Length: 343
Length: 262
Image (cartoon, rainbow over all chains, first blue to last red; front, side, top):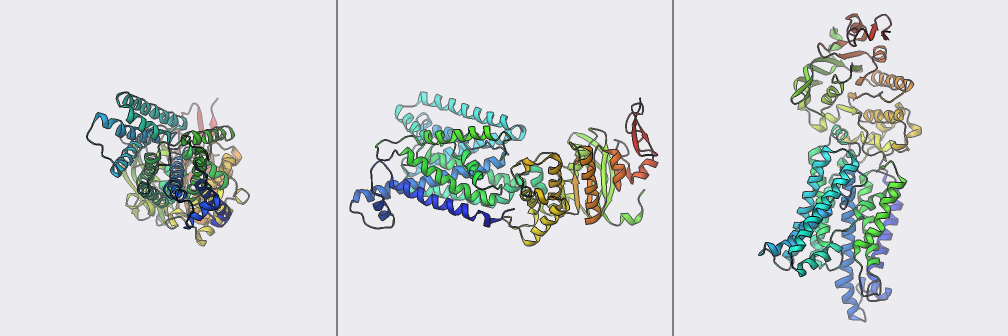
């Protein structure tokens, strides 16, 4: 039973960790800025060193916000998929949704040299990139849905997701064979994943997409809980299956597609966070899980980004490498520890 | 076959119902009328269409012909939400998430009545409490579903249906996978629920002998007449004699049991 009082303490702890991680993420970076100065800048004080202020406000704060949005978005899309597909191993990356987004992005970045005349610069370019990768992720999501309706087997669905990933990779490699080096490099950088480099304008677009996704998820909370029993039971509880399923799919596509468009295909956050959250909150009630994965996802992404930044070094690691190093063991641990694959 | 008195309180009735899949009708000519507080079993040989009938009654698949009445109205005239307060289901399919706690699962039964985000009111909690007590699940209520045995899980699923507080409960083979003791236990529970709460309970079963002993009425799907009535009426009509090939299994009308022919 969803007794919210029991979960107050864990929520409080999560929120505190979120604030701490946010501060940590901003105070650490390639340029060493004292923590007191960072706090000073954040509360609106004037810094002695103007370039520090510039670094914090134009680079680190948007980056931290991006990390929050990316982590929350991916984690929520993972939760939605696990419930919708009744599959504990579902997630944007595993089911090939991220691959679909990659395909959309690849077609736009590299295909544009083949079908020239479409590329425009600036904000429109970002929007078209977002649209392209969202369409890509929607298409794969729909394909997975169709297959999932026919194949009830959990493992088969995952293998199909992997196959979609392979097909995408194949098309991408064909594209990269024909494209010029500059475009290829642009795509490869995108595919490393990064939460930096987003302007405030881009950030607000991403925020809009994520908010719509979150809103749709909140509206679907009751249906999501009913889906835990299976579709026939959900229908018998008065859930409008078609409408709820569409709402959940659109939310998933927006969250995973939007994030992937701006931050690249980031692995494992979507799959791992819902499971990690279930370790803290011993419930399956989405009323608790939805806000919890949002916060937890943000925390994890902030931490991964902090590590990827290699504090005080000039170089930056691809964030995908970090999330994979953290995420893959979680999946293995899940499979080994929970042979029943409960979710 | 039925007396007028029972007919007046009909909760669920079918007329010349045909169920099955689009191009392939499975059972035709199903006629029955269930009253308030009645326990009814649908029996018949494997593959005759018991589950298909149940799924059709539960609106999980469309009927092919005939009519289904829930109370005064046709089944199709109900919206999904309206129907959710009339019929609850216990199916054979495993629940998708076994990580739910028993209480969480039973609470889902209140969904048709809760607000947009599913907040449980005091009234909802009372209904959940009643269901827990009725099915004797006090000791199990904080357990996770994957920790339960088949029989315990079945009781939880029945409690969930009970919490949904519908006038009709449909159960698909609630006693499969259970041993004799638990079979009897579940069936007796269903009987007491039907009689105490005045709910109409319909379940499919292979346990014809138990059904004869425990149920108020029986629907025997034989693919032809599909006789419906009180067990003793059906025995008098010799409805069970032809159910199985007589040289393998024969029916003893005096004891209401089947005997293996040597």
